Length: 638
Image (cartoon, one colour):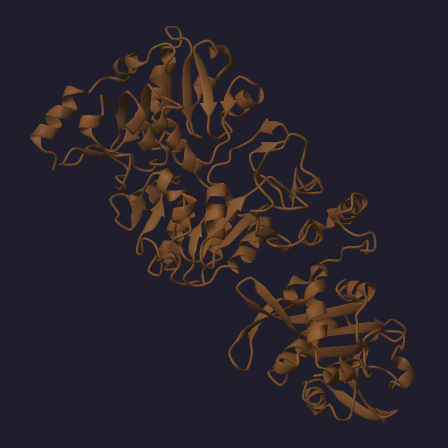
C-alpha cells in the first residue's frame, strides 16, 4: 500500500497534461516514450501548443499511437528525428520532412548519456508508484530509462493500465518532475493472421531449433509462425529485445520455461513488449519476466553469454552474396536497424548459436523477388554478408557462413521463388557470380525428402536430396572411399572426379536424375557419409541405382535408409523399376537389396548380379538392354 509520504510527494507534483507540457520551450529536444508505451495524453497536449512553439525536436523509436507532430503543416513547430521508421512517420521521413538515424538499438542510450544527443524533456508513461515510491516504465523500458536518466526534465503520464514490469525499468518519484494521471487504455498491437508463407517459414526455422535453445524473436506473422511451430520443443529460453502474445502463448503451452538458460535462467529477458491487454495482464508484476534497457539486453557481448542463442530477424531483400537490406527500399527509409545486428552478432558468438534472417521470397503480390542479384540503388545494407549465417524463405534454408560467393548464390537461388530462379541464375552467370557451365534450370528442391534419422550407434544423420553446393562435400566423400569401395561403386578403378562430373552429380533434376545423401552434422561441420542416386531410362521408365558409403560407415543402416528414400521418390514419380548391378562379392549390398521390402527379381548377367526392384507392375520382363550403358556411375556398393 502506498505510504502517506509517497502519496504526498506524488500529489505535490501532479499536474494536468496542459500544465506539465508548459515545461517544453522552443528549441528543446523532447524524447517520447516508444512502442505501445507512448504517452498519448502528453503527446496530444504538446501538439496543442504548436502555435506557441518553434524548432522543437521530437525523438523516439517507433510509436503505435498518433503522431500529429509529423504533419506537414507543423514543420515550423516540430521536427521529428526517429531511430526507427514506422508506418505513421514513414511519409514524413521519405519526403524529407523528418529525419531517420540508422543506429544499433544497443548504442542509442550512449547518445543520451554521452551528451552527443542531449535531452531537455522526456515524456514517458509509467505505472502508479508502489509503496516505496517506484514507478515502472512497464512495457517500454528499451531506451526510455536512459532517456529519463539523461533528460533535464521528466514528465510522466501515470496510468494504472500500464503493467508494472519487474527488472531494471524503475524510476523513483523523486526523479520525476511532473506527474499527469490518466486512465487511457494502453496501446495494443495484434499480429496479422499467419498465412501459408509465414507458416512455411516458421516450420523451416523450427527445424533449426533444438530443446534447450534460447530464442530472440520479434513481432509479426513470421515470429508468430515460428513460435506456433515450436509445439514439440521443450525447455526453451528467451533473451529478446521484444515479444508479443505469441511468446506468452508458447509459455502457456509449456514450450518455454527458461530453465536451461546459461544466462539469467528461469527468466524471460526483454526490453519491451508489444501486444494485447491479455499479454499485458500476464506480465504485470510477474517475476518470470525481467525487463532491462537495450544497452544491456541488446549488447552483443551479453547476448553471446547465452549458449545456443537463436536470433531470428527479418529483411526486405537479400542479394546473392548475402548482403541483407532491412531498413530501406532503395533510397527511401522504411523501418530501422533496430536490434538486428546486435542479435545476429551476439548469436554468432554464442556457443552453438544460430543467427537467422527470415523473409518471404517475394513482394508486391509475388511480382518482385526479395532474393536479388544486386541490392536496389541506395538500399541500406544493415547486416553485412560477413555476418550472415542462415537465410530462410518459405522454400527452405540457405547456410552462407564460410561459403564462397558461388556457393552463396546457388544456395540463395535455391530458396528463391521458382518464378525467379532461372532469371536470377542467368543474371548471376552474366556478372560472374556463378560459372557459365552451371545448369540453367533450377528445379524445385524436394523438401519432403529431408529427414533426420539415427544410425545404429545413435548418431543423428540428415538424409536429404543433394544440392548444387555439395560439390566440395562430394569430392571429399569420393576421395575418402577405399579403393575397394571405389571398385565396387564403378566396377572399375576411378582415381579422379572431373569438375564436369562433379557438377553433373550435384545438379540432378530430381526426376530423371535423383540423388540422396546422408550427412553427419557436428556443429556447422558436415561430412557426406553416403550417396545414393538413380538415372531414369525414359525408353522403358526404369532407373539404374548407384550407392556408395564411406568404409567406416558401412553396415550401420545408412544404405537401407537411403534406398528407402529413393524407392519412395521413384514411386511418387512413377518409375516402374530400379535396377542394380552388384558384384557377387558385395555381400552387404546383396543383402540390402534382397530385404528392401519391394518385389524383386535377381539374375546373373556377365558375371554381375542384376537386381530388379519392381515399384509397380510392368508388362514385360527386363533384359540387359534395359540398363542404359551411357549413364555414369552405374554400379552399386554398400
